Image (tube, rainbow, N blue to C red):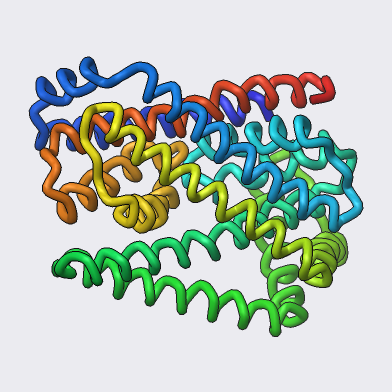
Length: 340
């Protein structure tokens, strides 16, 4: 696992180089560096506090979901565990899609549960995190539209966000009501893929269809167990919403540190929309999220592009590296069989 993680991280980091290279081709780097040098260190310290608040809030959401599954975790352990989960997302390609298998492993090792339980827990948290992000984005765009003129970029963003919400909620509902059929077809498909891989790769034995189906069924039953506790889900949603507000505050403070302010409604919808770029084959969406966030903020505000780039670099640098440094230690401890 360690070697695989290192290889994925190295490959992903290589992909960010041309992305940032193209980004800086269109931006004069000198005024960006000047803005960064003028940033107030005290305010940047508050940005760090906001980033830690985001990690704590989302770790409490994960802790709430795990408690529903009868997996008790203390607040410090859940904080470090979620930091490890964020680290795995940050260093593997395709963001959460690439990091969730590692995250499930971390949860199973740290809480002594089955791998499927850990995967169901983190998948549930990811799903819950989408709900307040969608709400905040809609509220932010709505407020922006009532105060200022809705530009063509904003209209496109609103249409895209609405379509994405319908697609995700509709698709999620269909998969949920058809979960037995999904279990059947998915187990058959994965068994076929596993046998083909085993026929090509030496010394690899493929699990049979029944084994795969049992694991998928355990995953679905875990999701069903979570769904039977609506009050706990409300608490988890509250923690998730608080996490998004901490992220929005961190970006707003990054601008304030440089001596500029932007409407808070703008950061409310800019962060969730830019987070979609995290599905790119880049570690933690590095390069992709920054590009989308900069383009969006430049198009909807009157702030100079150099200031926007500097603020985004402060925000994304801390959002990326704070959990990466904390979570890297957690992953090292877990893979070394030490308890977090």
